[in-house]
Image (cartoon, rainbow, N blue to C red):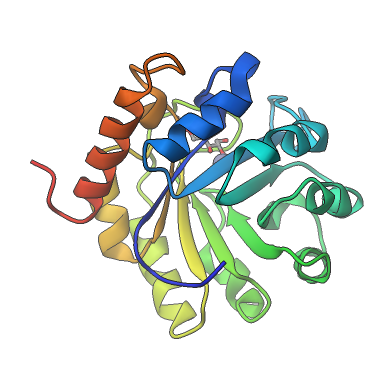
Length: 229
Ligand code: DX5
Ligand code: ZN
């Protein structure tokens, strides 16, 4: 994985057909997805349960590019090796998931994986201030985590603050929740480069009719770069 700040669209397979993950991952990549975002939920840190490391390992061979694993679980540390073994390129843990996020990020990097740290809407940017030299990505949640298809919560000020705090460090800013053609422009202008989108990518398409995925991805990318009309 080389670092750059060009806009990357990361469809969340939480909005895909759960009976068809392999084909869905291949379809979104073929239709222009940059990263594949994988939402892991434990029914404890968040109120919903999705899937775990075995599912990640099963879909890995169907993803050519970056597998971006978002852990909405607590605790995190006992499961890092399992997700690394499953082939994650990025593992993101929540700052709210436990008292030792610094140790967690160190452990993710020690497992040979890029380390991400996520912030719930209620958590200030300052929570990651002392983590920026051991993190590869900061994920700004623009919904309260747990479900796809929720209404976007404006975090523009937090994104701007983080962008200034990051400076020249090679740290991505990822936005997760409610990203669509209407919300993408503001977050990229504020400094985000990775846009997670679930419902806005998978809407209208399927494995047997994947063209809408491509149209949706191109529309979000165009909106993010200010060329969407
Ligand atoms: C929320 C997840 C998100 C979400 C995105 O808990 O982390 O990745 O599924 O879905 P949309 O784009 O539908 O808000
Ligand atoms: Zn996510």
